[in-house]
Image 1: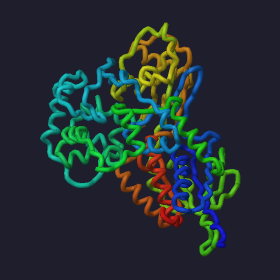
Image 2: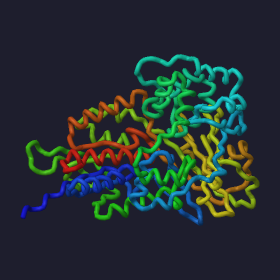
Image 3: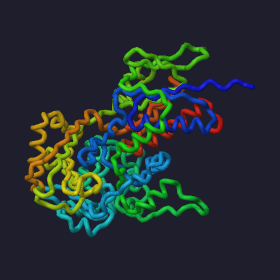
Image 4: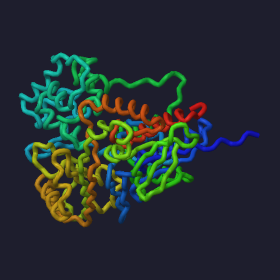
Length: 493
């Protein structure tokens, strides 16, 4: 009888959502391919999940990091089904979908028919008080302006100004789109963030018409096909733009940790160096050196750390200019809880966004207990305010009392909240929001080609590469894991 094959050892650097999902899919793909593997996960923090962190306290479910995910991005839904936690999913409150934008110190309803800040219906834009008559006319030029030729990348701000004019960019698109990345539209790559905008321009000659037609298109299921787990979940929550879990996003982190029983954990241990084995050796190709001196032999390495940590690990072996070009913005979340009896007002909607031009400390405010009914006891009100964005990050580092005072002042002036909070939870996320510069997609592809040539079997992925949302990180993790198992020679991978 032939001896059993020696397991391949794979080291995952980083225990955030990308690293955990990568470890999960490495094991699953290896099993499907008939390849025995050992997976070790090195995470610099004692806590798993990266930016995902849920505080469950006194009946509150408080997200200290991301607070939900886009329902249409299926990677997280498929993973939830795989992990058996799909029944924990909850949609936003249907009566809490309405949102507002601040303009000249007042809240204005967001016009109906917006798709990622871009109008797809004319009448609501004509009625809105967010734009001047000249701004509305300028936006309408999108119907007649020719598409720009050439294939070069450009910034989101440049593209939208060219198509719709500066007024609609600053008053509507910027607070919506820049809020996703905490970024500056004039510096963020269009191709890396919203490539569908450029595709709409090229295909339809108009951004507005292109997105309107995209909204109306509904792909029909293939004849005889069966819905995927994600499709079944989406059918259950039809129309809900965002989802979360009843006990918060940490639910998926906890489920992944349970599913990874048997993995080799190195918590509180940062990967400090990567060494190649001597050429011609029969053993593992690499050694990952941890900051306490432990050495992990590895046949493959999946690096999911932030760009600045990945660069420190890889720069000795490969040109890491792409990783250095990805700057990170710092942000803070300030969650305030109030007694409903003394709060003094009711909310009709999910919250409001604040454009840069308003000069406020807060960039947005979510009326959390209205938007997500599972987050608060019925006799309490929960608000979540955001502070900090690229180019305007000083407030993130202010002392707690000063930061709370500034946030409460904005809340009083904008929505009339004068009640004293019964609880405040501040989370500072330093260097947490990657900023994709113009040319990012091409630079990423070039870097990955160089990495594959210089370090076969070493992979780098995560929020710094191809999408910062939780579903995007899970999708990248799965794609990377499947590619790594194929590279290691799994039959049927």
